[in-house]
Image (cartoon, rainbow, N blue to C red; front, side):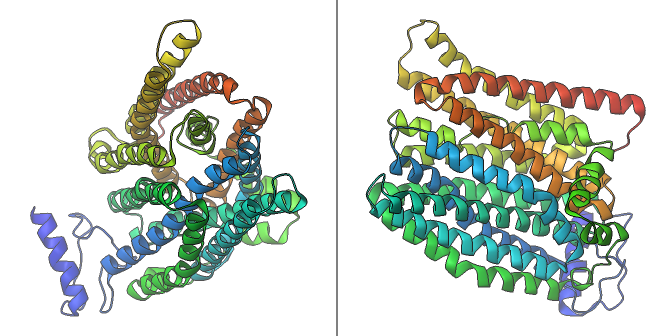
Length: 483
């Protein structure tokens, strides 16, 4: 408590301009957001910078989460007899992020913080608006006509571009700005990461509920226009809040020093940039098995994502019901962000990751078991299997986000600063490559009656990821990889 009181006094003194030159002790961790200097100069407001980053992240994430939830249901509304259009959108969206990840990471590494983040926000929000308007056009056209397919194609293309922008804004704000602000303070970074993840999960909880109720109790067209209006209005406040964060923190205002590696990546050929500066850097890290285990969790349909949402709607669930279950999953994940800092202090990053990944694996195996038993001939009402399945998915979110937080902080703490942007870009690409493969399989098994096959395969992949990460932890202890 004494350390907390000292932290509050130091931050208040810095904000009021009453503690010129006051030194902040790193040994006692007086401030949870240390700057590059052990002093807090006049005009420095680290808490204001932190809150500005939280606010801009919330604005961006809310709009993207609403559209991510709505677009799958819109695709099923366009083509209700098949999951093919939903799978096609997911495949194009994932492939776009696969091939853009390394380049987006390189762009962020070599570009000023404010310019990089704002350009990603503009790309994301503009593309959501265009995708929404294209979907509205397609819904008004006659199904099967040239105008219908043109609108559907534009919906998919612009929706994929918005995902690239969202990926870039995450790499910039959530992976770079927070690290710079915390200035190598691992405890402070854990708290800020938990705050950012809490925002992600709060939006995952509330944004789909808002979109689902709009779609259920007004109309799909009204929901589309509302989501487009939000994204159109949000981009200017998002960029302004970044400016506020920079004004409040000298380390965020400081120009990035371009590294030789980043300049080489920019000036070299596309092939060299794709391999040496991206994938080569990735697999040179000793942490790559842990990062790969995290990426494998995207090779699954056992989430409340596009394909599962469309499948459950095909089974008769309403948009409002689906949004409530998705919200429950977000609450489960939100609990993990609250427990992560205390688990980290007691067990360490690697052990926290082990707990998270096995929690998820066991939850999903138990969720799929009733579906498998029903297919073997055991009597079980369809509604019962659906609720057990959804209950397991909700419980698994706790383990997923706990594992995600642990591995993400490993990458932030243990990867050299000059590699972090490219590595996060490649990590995002691998995750989206695996997600693309899940959509390819969805196109092969496009009939809703075949969806349980994808669920069985997905649970096996999650167990494989858990085994891979556990082996990594055991080997790292033998080889002396320090936390």
